[in-house]
Image (cartoon, rainbow, N blue to C red):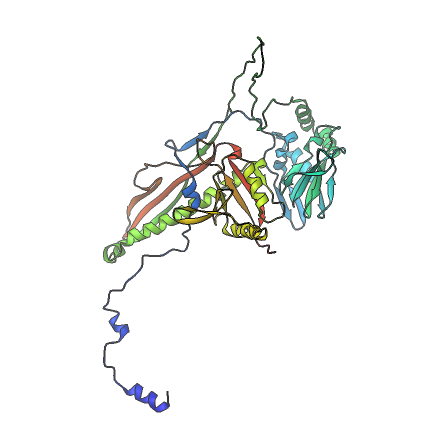
Length: 467
C-alpha cells in the first residue's frame, strides 16, 4: 500500500462497532478447565480392587525359609564405593547378626575392584575364598552343558552378590563362572578377613559357627516348608504324617493416604458459577491429581510399590541392554497366568524397535476402545509413572492379578463417609474469617503381592539406543 493510501485509510472514520468492544457483550463458548497431568492410568484400571474394611490387609502364606532375599545397598563418594554396614545382613551367613561395630569393620574391609567387560571374575569348580558384592554393572553366570558347551545361568545386576558360602566353609567352590558383561564395580570381602575379625569379635565367631551348623531346611523349590507325601506305593507302608505350617508373622498392608485441602472463595462460588460450577471443576481437577499420585505411589512407594516389592529372584536383567522379545519371553516364563505388562512409553517404543529389527509385528487388542500392543497375548500397558533414570534406563513390570490367582491386588475401602468415588472422599471443613470455603479431599489405597512369583521386573532396560 502506498503512503497516500495509508493516510486515507487512517482518516476514514469507524462505521461500525469493533469486534473487541462487541466481545464484551457477547457470551463466549468456552471449554471446561483442561489439565495436562491426566494420563490413561492403566494400572488403576487393570488392577482388581479388594475391599479392606478394617483398613489393614493381611497376607497369610505358607511358611517359607527366607535367606538373604534382598539386595545390598551401596554409597558412592566420587569414584569410591562402600557398602552400607547393615546391608551386609542380606548375606545368608550374616542374617540377623546384630553387632553394629563388627558390621562396620567388615564393610571397611571390603576391597573395591573394577573389572572391564569380558573379564572372567570367577571360574566354576575353583576354590571360593571371598564373597563378591556387585555395586554396579552386569555379570553373566555361566555353566557347562551336558555336552561340555557353555550355558547361560542368568544375569545379575546392581546390588547382587555371590560367593557367600565362602564365609562358612573352607571347602566351598564356585558353582558357576562369573563373567563381566559390562564394566563392573565389585566389592570383595575375603574369608580370611572375616576370620581375622572373628578372632577379636566373639559374637561374630559364634554367629558364623551357628550358621554353619544349622541343618538345611526341607523345602520345595519356592523355599516353602515341605509337605510330606507318599505316592506310587503298594501294600501297607506307613503313610507319612504331615501338616501345613503358616508364617507366624504374616505381612500386613495398611491403606496409604493421599490428601489435600481444596479452598474456594465464597465470592467465586457465589458470583462466577455460570455457566460452569467453579467448585465442581476445582474438585474434578483435584481428584484427577490425587488419582495420578495414587498410581505413582502404587509403582514407586518404598513400602508397597510394585518396583520395590518384586522378589529378588523375580528381577531380571536384559541380555543386550535393550528390551528384546527374548527378555519379554523370559519375564513371562517366570510366572503362570501373566495378565499384563506395565512399561514406560519409551520402553514400549524401544521394544517395538527390537521387534522391527527382527521383522516381528506384535499383535494389538482393543481395550475399552483403545488399541493396546501385546506380547504372546499379554497386553503391554503404558505407564509414565515408571521412572526413566538419568542413564536412560527403566524397568518393565509383568504381573499376575487377582486373589483367586494368588496375584497382585489393589487395596481400598469403599463406603467411607462423604465418598465421591470408591475410597475417595470430599469433606466440608467450614468457612474461615476470610470467607474461604475448605474441603478435605482424601484417597485411601495400597497394593499387595500375594505370592512372590506374581510380580516380576525386567530392570535396567536401555530406552535410548538406536541401531
